[in-house]
Length: 318
Image (cartoon, rainbow, N blue to C red; front, side, top):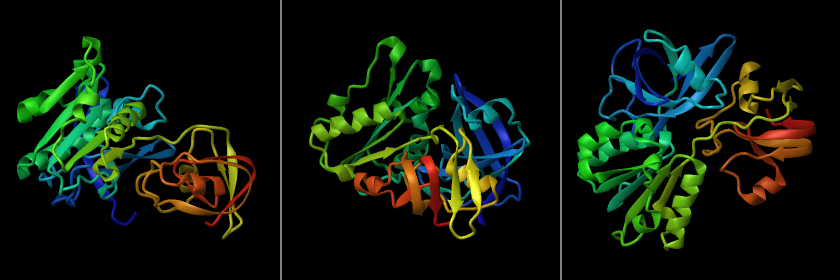
């Protein structure tokens, strides 16, 4: 992408068990593009013959234009990105980083902000809280973790924001009091959640059952493309056929073939990579959060970052 940045790794810090923070500073120097809390960047990592591109939330203070910071959990079933960062990335390495994009923007009209994080889902909230505090806005963080040893940023956030930060460690028997959190909040309060899908579903369902309006609920989905059986796609504009591997997304296969489709989130949320389906014989396995159930049933459009295919012919408008 034309606005990609060449950035050097200047620090690698283990923030918690299995979570590594990476600080990146521009090779060319100068101030970085501004971003707001909730923004992410896509980081391209050259790993042997493979270029991995993963989205990560920015977890530094948006006022700091000298560097970007991300934090990456070591995934038990890593597709390669987290293993690369934890095992092979070193201080001094240069990575290609896309410009910040924000699909998890706080609603600045809110009277109060309630943040509910689980595990590595803390990352977008670190930057949000810095902005909320600077602006004098009411907020509170509720952070669910397996243990305090796995709670990235917990100490620094408690030091900065005191009782506005609540930690719930499962190994101590603490549980998020969701029903309590969504009751008796001031009119105009907004609720944000990020973390495991089950946690986010529980947070949103509890709020909906308590009568919260949909426009006051916000969630950020951290999703990796699902594995599956290999398949082939035909590109209508050239007739070219591209093979998609079992651990490779359709988007990744196209990129590996030298094609550069549009994308933003790489997680099936934003809709930027929506591609028209010209023809198919089989079943499109939609893995996104963007299409409606009706659109999925029609299968006239596919989100190439998250969806797969089972069948003998798939032709896309590419």
